[in-house]
Image 1 (spheres, helix red, strand yellow):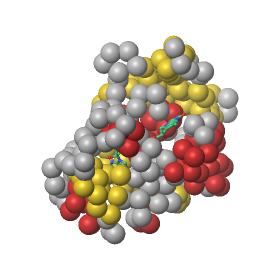
Image 2 (cartoon, protein in one colour):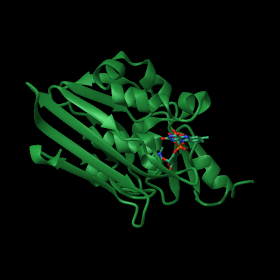
Image 3 (tube, protein in one colour):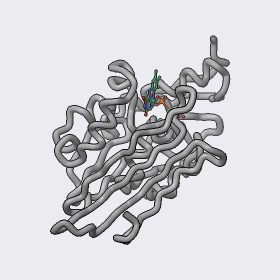
Length: 233
Ligand SMILES: Cc1cc2nc3c(=O)[nH]c(=O)nc-3n(C[C@H](O)[C@H](O)[C@H](O)COP(=O)(O)OP(=O)(O)OC[C@H]3O[C@@H](n4cnc5c(N)ncnc54)[C@H](O)[C@@H]3O)c2cc1C
């Protein structure tokens, strides 16, 4: 399949990317694993693709306030190579390791996966259960959106036209927290629902829990229910 014609512009800084994205019909291009197939199938349209793939300032994993900052352009491979991830957030490393194949993990970015918001995505559910926040920048300024407000439905997020996801901020896990992912239910090879639970224990007592039910039934909402309630579990 051949996509409809579009312009291509390579941004050399975040500010330049934001200027280019401010024009109607412009869309970001990161690793291209989600957007290029959609353009080829003509299920998505862009007048101009703004290539952000070379923006080093959007890459990498760093410690931040007891948690982590993950640049939007960080690839799954880079997440897997990060000791901060494997030691501090083992479930994130486990889930990343299960994503697709080497090629997708090497080029696909966390930010691209999150912005695409496929309800079958592994990453969206994990980031919701981890209570991540998303930093969004546009020419008008910067705002931070909690993951429970970011995912609006299938392929729909809080990102406004002209906005760029620049980083994902993970708060520290509650002390003693353990996160489990219940096996997803599959229907016809498609993910139907996933339940993720984050439990924090102290002296064998449950002190915090977060439950996430993500499903594909209409209207395809992710549900995030923060709880501080022992009786729940
Ligand atoms: C064969 C295959 C198998 C896959 N299997 C899995 C799997 O098992 N589990 C899973 O979770 N995912 C899977 N995926 C999806 C994969 O995770 C995503 O395709 C990938 O992460 C998208 O990232 P990208 O950098 O390629 O984004 P792109 O394709 O470049 O962009 C995707 C969308 O996000 C927008 N965008 C990108 N970056 C930003 C940004 N920083 N700010 C704002 N908007 C942005 C783009 O405009 C576009 O709309 C698979 C994909 C393929 C092709």
